[in-house]
Length: 173
Image (tube, rainbow, N blue to C red; front, side, top):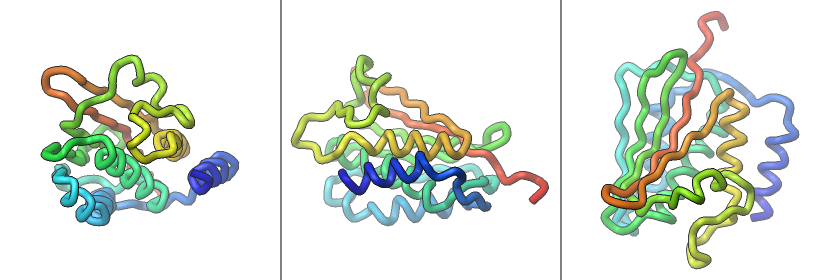
C-alpha cells in the first residue's frame, strides 16, 4: 500500500509524463501474458479483440502498462472461476477506445461513483487490495488526456466494463 501511495503522489507531483508512440496491441498482449498464469490458476479466461490496423497512440508506455495490469488484476481479484475478460481496442475519433469487459459479478450501482476514490473498497476484506489501484489508473489516464468510465451490471448478464480513449500520435512529431 505504501508503494502505491508513493507512486500516486509521485505521479500527481510530476509536471509531465514521458510521451512517445505506443503500440497498444503489443502492450495489451504483454499485460495479458504477464497475468496468464494467475488467470489460469483462477480459471478466468483473458482474450484480446483489436481492430486491424490499429493506430499508434501517444503516451507513456510504462504508465499505460500499469493501467492495463491494474485493470486486469482487478478482474483476477473480483471475478469468479469460469468468468471471462476481454481487452477491446477499437479505432475511435482522434484515438483508440480501450475497454476491459468482464463477466464477473459486477459492481453495485451505489458504489460506481466512488470506486476511483482513494481507499474506497467495494469488496469484502478477504479480497486483497489497498483501494488505491483505480485512483492510480484514473490519475494516469488524466495525465494522458483521458477519462476512465465504468459501467456495471449485477443482475441478469453480470459484468463490468471499464473504458477510456487514448489519443493517437500527432501527425507532426
